[in-house]
Length: 340
Ligand code: HPA
Ligand code: ZN
Image 1: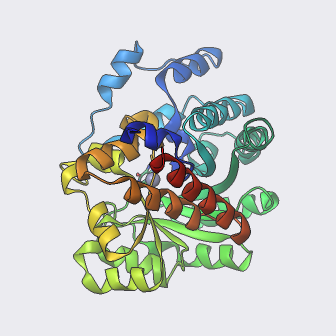
Image 2 (image 1 turned 180 degrees about the vertical axis):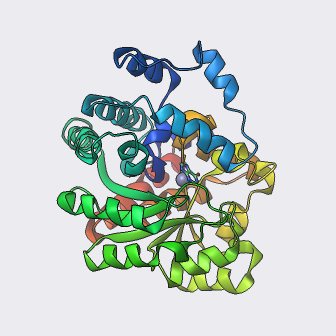
Image 3 (image 1 turned 30 degrees about the horizontal axis):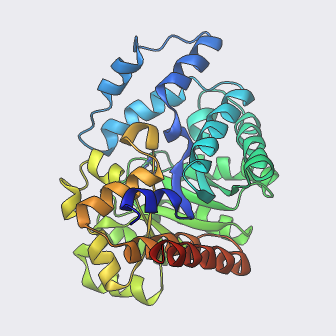
């Protein structure tokens, strides 16, 4: 019989919640820092990994922004993105929707063009050389003000063909979705789809705002939705996808134990939950490790894992006919494995 681990490895899947700056492995960070003549405060890979011991989201973000500070040249953004794509190719991820944080770089004097060109060249190679399709999502940093987001948005207009959606990330509490209502409105008028991190550390009210004010197509995280029964019902009625990130939730102490993770409740309620890695270099695992950790903690069956993989395509921004093809692929895989 196929083990759960092998079943997860082989199942075709999509990843929908992934910050490219969060895939920066220490080895690559050292290499890029060296070629850019940047001193990093850690002496070794082991020392860096030891620092990855977070008590909350802000603790993590401080280290994450510092790490991203060594990215200078277009080639750096290419190398970062390409390393991630090769990794997920080995994990049977067939499609990825990737966040990037332009303000983290433009605020250090790196041009928007350098960032987008480096990432996009790797995405192009992904389709051509690996057969992994991708979409790019530009996130606004919510700890900065809306004018800064609007300025960033205006720069993105020159790259509309490369960017599918806008999102909202960084420090959540005290920075509600309503702060970004105007820039999201502009983005929708220009044809961008919208998503937002909500209910990771912030309250259920932020999830309502993301739905009603930002008119998002997906909620990133959404854990705190369970504090409000009406909201859960609304998410079910709207078939609103939630991009859930189990190892992230554990490392940032959104949950104390994966056994208490709300994923099972989400599935029982009929929510369109998906499994994702968020910032895999920092949280101890790529997408398959996330599937495995949550499956072990909640004792998920192969049927439930298959549902999650189907959800990942259903919740994607792929065209309807491609979505259906991918979902059929997942079902075929399941049938093949259970009939062995
Ligand atoms: N939450 C908010 N902002 C982020 C995250 C996250 O999990 N990862 C990278 N930026
Ligand atoms: Zn995230």
